[in-house]
Image 1 (spheres, rainbow over the protein chains, first blue to last red):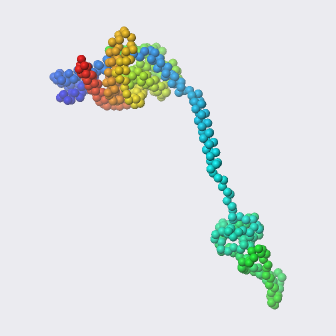
Image 2 (cartoon, rainbow over the protein chains, first blue to last red):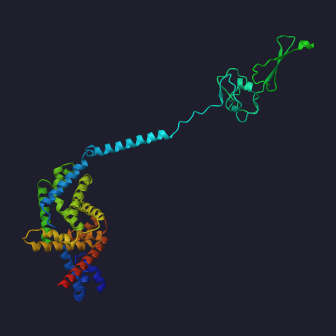
Length: 228
Length: 209
């Protein structure tokens, strides 16, 4: 074993922490090597120097105070939370939050304007004649008279009712030309048999006078023409 | 004070605790009573172990105030976790582990170590009787603390438990949560550093003369 190896094992050798074989090997080297032997002695002296220092003089009062502080901390930790709670600070904080909330909402009321209720342009009551502007996009034919009387809001899911006389709400139709709301001519043809009558409803022109509300049926008496 | 006397002094306190314990309160029974909430039992437990805890804390941290704070925190943790302690285990080893962890946490919070001057100043407040002796002892303590502070935290803990507390390498490894091989390596490195520190100090001392 050379000096480099011995130097590495010396710190553990002085405390007897090496294996038996290694210890014997080191001892035989130290017996012949003065330099390593002196190094081993220095390690021994250092160990003794470390152990020779005593602890500071901690008297009984020091330990009594230590135990007292431990019990004080235990008591503080075990105290119910409401006893150790700082109510003053909590109250101050609550007041601050309340004040901030009042200021915030007061400012909010000043800045947000009241919005107007949207007008429902599509809802009318029976007898009320809508303006032209109330006509929805998509409707190709409108009869003001018909619309005035029999306007309905026709949706895909709702049945279409053209001549329903009694509707609680009259709304403007949104449908296209499928729904004819032209002014109709009623042609009623009487025969010799009074129980037989032929009634035609024919789509006619727009009423020239929008105020005209009654439709006079045209009656044709076939007996006038002979036959039937 | 010679190391043998220190050992005897500590053993004497330990014997006192053991005698008291063997008569009426064996350590296991003391711990069991403390676990059930007996405050007197826990107080007894503190009395039996306070010197050991304070000594370790002082060697690891280097000054009285830090040692007192660390000892206080150690006993608080013992109180909090005593209900989890298994009576079959070694209470001393468990206590050492807590103390070392507390000291490590405390050392992280502060970076400076007590200087030589602080210890000398403390010694100056001593009485006239044996004043010179006290100053020398104080300086010796300060030098040892300074030598220990030159080590890393792990090396310091290993050498304090092994060389100053006299625990076996395997027990030190168990307390520090390491392996005996690692502990031996750390101790070896620590002893080399302490030897070099002492050599430098002695060399400077000879130069001044």
